[in-house]
Amino acid sequence: MKNLLMTLALVLSTMQLVAQTADNQHLMFKGVPIDGTLSEYVEKMKLNGFTLLGSENNGAIFTGEFANYQNCKIGVGTSNKKDLVSTVFVLFPEREEWNDLYGDYSRLKQMLSEKYGIPNESKENWEDGYEPSLVSRMSALKRGECNFTTTFLTTNGKIQLRIEHQDATCFVFLGYFDKINSEIIKAKAIDDL
Image (cartoon, rainbow, N blue to C red; front, side):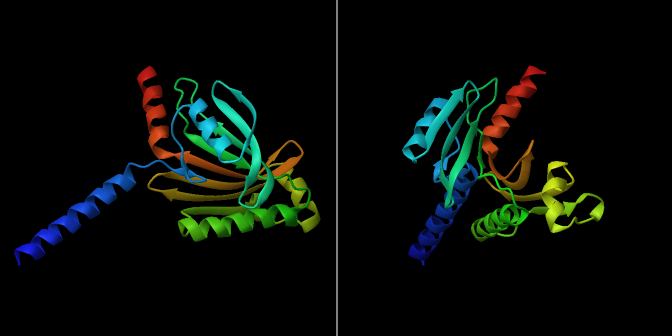
């Protein structure tokens, strides 16, 4: 009986340690924790096969393959006040046809759902509830008349998938926002007030 109680106590303490460890982990991007200084993270991204296009004080841009998509742009962001990586985002290849763009969004949403579960929020709508014809959807997107955003909240941060446009360019955006480092950066900003 004493051995059984000792074993049970050991199992329970191990489970508690694992739970505490999971709560104190950083969000991962391609198996790498979103943490460290920009220069440290740049080196990790290079080791992961990404090509550095440019770097400034609070960010770096890479190109490479991600989730079986070639020629993605990957950005790494820090705060202006603190050299601590808190955000990684992916800009998938630009699309000129709605079916291609929405197809990318749908495939990525499905894969993210398989990994992270049901999204916490999913908004997929057109302005005023009016869905334009297939031919005019890209024009409506460029005018900002739709919102296609899916958000997954994890214990380690937020993952957000969106259909975006920048001027005439339309693409899918995927952002990873680390909870621990975002809170550190926010605390630093609050200290400034």
